[in-house]
Length: 133
Image 1 (spheres, rainbow, N blue to C red):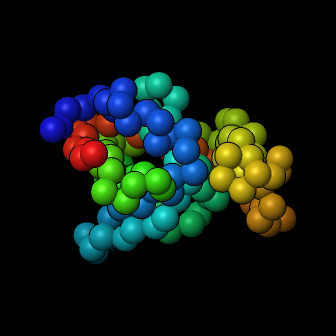
Image 2: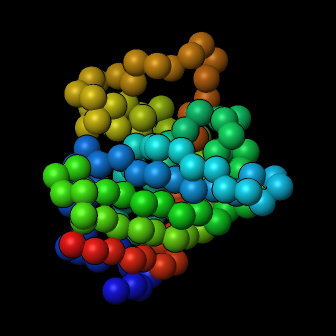
């Protein structure tokens, strides 16, 4: 089954400690995939990263993405989202990575921030979804 909205029966994956795999495109067009923490604001899939990482550079150049989220309790249940970056922002990104740290590792503060690091949030519009389970 496919559509452009996140199916309500799969919204639980965004509340679980479900890792996502984010696929972006390198400058030469080859794929690059990174495991990431993932969030959903009711309209956009949110990915938080440090500025100037490879995925940040890739997404600024070409905002097309594919995201795969596997249910941590059932590896045969998954959600795939293909979408487009509609916004890159630093606003609220530091607080957001702390929220993600609480969800994924149970810590109030993200522990791996480097001195001078700038966090960014990519807001991704779901253009197509596929799911199973």
